[in-house]
Length: 449
Image (cartoon, rainbow, N blue to C red; front, top):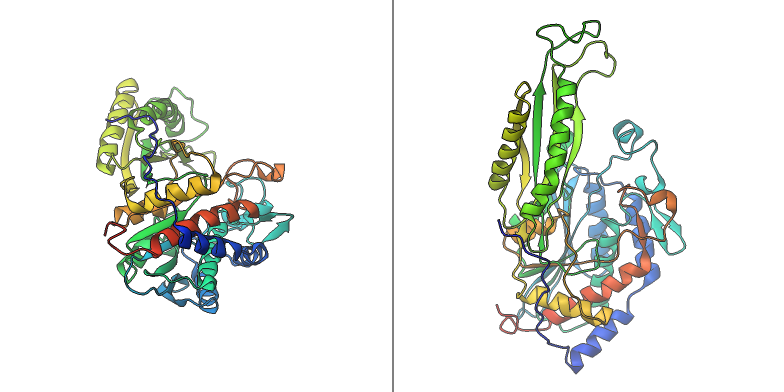
């Protein structure tokens, strides 16, 4: 297995000429912090859990239409859909997709989310936007709705600037982007929305996605979900522990959990390469009845998420997982267990020499006024991996996250990904504007197409 240190992206210098520089400054001057903030508050107020994003998709379609874009909602199922807007170019250039998912990872109800998300629903877990100075707080206010608002603001500014675009600017927003297979809503999630979008009429030459972390990425992680079933006997609490034929699946599962946890750093070290450090987590243990603790469960289920790189297929990760299970069986021969992989998404990569990655690097260095250097290793799974996997050269740009100066009570754990600092979004918007002008005002030959 290849194990590389973080690599610095080789950058081809190609500064904007005088005309494009004027277009860039004109477009950036149109960025409107108040408009962006108000849109973000409105987006945060519309609840859009995975598999129920239809209302938000329709709202975004209306915003795009009122902003001068050709727009429509691409329906997938009842209360499910994607929103697509297009600003037509002259037909001589490439099409550029600015893409974001629109679903959030919580139902935002006490019945569904507590106590597993904490002892209460915090302000950043509730689909209601609150403005706190330059912060917007609410479920998904940072991810994904801060990103949606930023992409729409970028599109509005480009439209208002009246630039002579050679290629089409496409704004695409899809449901089902969260790493969640929502069994209550047709197994929605795991990038099913963007897959539908790309297979039903949206096929750009390049794409840009905005996600957390202030760096340029040309690849993102995929994931594999594993289930380990540890077997015992259906028992009774009044039975002595040394009774022949009685096995406690919960106690046995605890040994398996500790063995897997001990193995995870070795998995990461073995598979780290490129821009990905593929961490994994033991994310759940299930067994027994909450209202019947007198009867020990015959089965305890362990759930894991393992991240993967573009250089490691789900099949290869299965082989590695089989190896660790074999070692656990050897260490604990009395433990009876089975395992399966029940979910997977492939990772994806774009050649760092590709135009869109190079343009994103130039944008980053122009706005930040310093060399980029190697991107910090990460393991986040997003729709960007699917875009690349389905053949769309894609660059990822972002902003500093989490915001460290926010309310302390909202700074622990992932929460609702719901605290965003508006000035940081505007800085990222300038980078995306640069990429759009750099790309959409050139001929296909200039872009290497």
